[in-house]
Image (cartoon, rainbow, N blue to C red):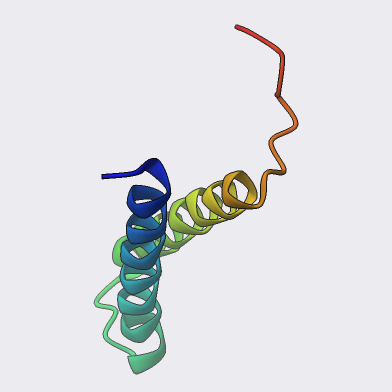
Length: 68
């Protein structure tokens, strides 16, 4: 299994998870402010990871050649 396959599969799963969170937010299925805050944090984290993977897949890694 190649790294590219794993990255693309992970990206698809992240997008599915984001879609699920967005559906809960848009459908009014939020029970309380704590759940809203949790979902917004989850959405933010998923978006950050999605962007990181997209950048890596594009080859936009600014840390090339730098260690630690």
